[in-house]
Image (cartoon, rainbow over all chains, first blue to last red; front, top):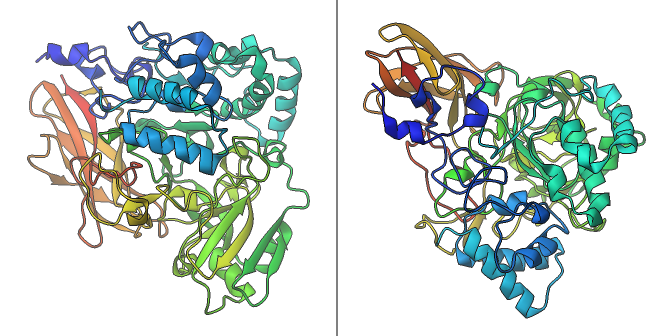
Length: 130
Length: 433
């Protein structure tokens, strides 16, 4: 029995392709998250993968868009973009994280308009709401 | 090849150094000789790190290089982040009873300290102070001479293992199932050391400190300082202060030279690079003890709820859980013939009572054989023979039950803002042909 539906869900290919049978349905990973982490099989893509959301290698593979550069320079002072690109959060959680980064993690507060641009970018691209 | 994950593959890596003792020399050579553009090739990763590294951040890149050099001895892990380094292990690479170094997940809140990068424990001391009669300052030799040495297999699991499945998402590394392992640890019982210091009646909680480096680079900032209730710290056959993992010095990525292991609690309680245990007269309030970190809502909430901070309570005992570690998801087996499936089961409470498996999406279940734990808080091997009646797509679901009769749920349990405690049943694809 072949289920074409599963064949299009090319998941876990990095891990599964090297071993096991070539049966298309064997590529389906029941534990692939529906969406969210770019680091996850079956999730939104990282750079190197053909996609409308392909990231900009000059800016840590963040997806291009207004606020990308500000976001990059603000965030990579402490951590790489890998953690950003995994997120799919509510707007309220992004607002909380900004405060947490400033108050608990030593992030430098920015001009209000820069903060607004960065949060708008994060809420646009790494959201569970849109 | 989707290119969406970093595969750490060291088969052809010239820098691959399996001997812990030579890692340091290897790293120094690496720093002298390596240009940024070749970093990815040098560590055998397919992820284009060099593209992420702006020229203005060379010192950071160098720091990354040192840690990534250590990652070269990891095999098959999925890299979630490169600064800090976080990587999880695919389920089929966790089949060993004792998790080997190369398959042990990496969860770092900060940067690996120089003392660990250099594997230099010279002058290292562990301070026990606070609500104790006689504060102690112990060298590693003191620990080894004054207290009974124990060697035990203890599960270490990140509190956020399974976070990837929460919807809406929860912030943090999007672990799927692989932020868990069960190495063999050698050290002394935390209870023995605390008792030697004389725990006062006023003791309520422990506070743990290490010397890892905050991501901001600020040497005054704590990376993470968590603790446990004093009763948990004093539990018989519970926490240990370890200097060895699998018979070798605790590796740099895992807490060299001393690491607390508090089994049954979120891995963050198992402080790496351990320098101090402060016995507190109140719940510890160190970094990542407060706010939403390692905390759960005090009451059940709908997914996406903004829970007030004051309604968050510290996450303690980890839930019952299991993994299918053999075969690898997607494997083909013969229809109509018994096929072995196996894995591990564990619980934050200690031993697991039962494991059942289903091959029909949870409609019916069959019991697996479950081996006794070699010691409390080790994971337990389970095995079952499953027969798939006809050719087609099946899933093997595993469900562990703890000693209180509590089972793993088939779906993501209680949503919480930071995505902790997801013990949903693990599932693999099994193809009958």
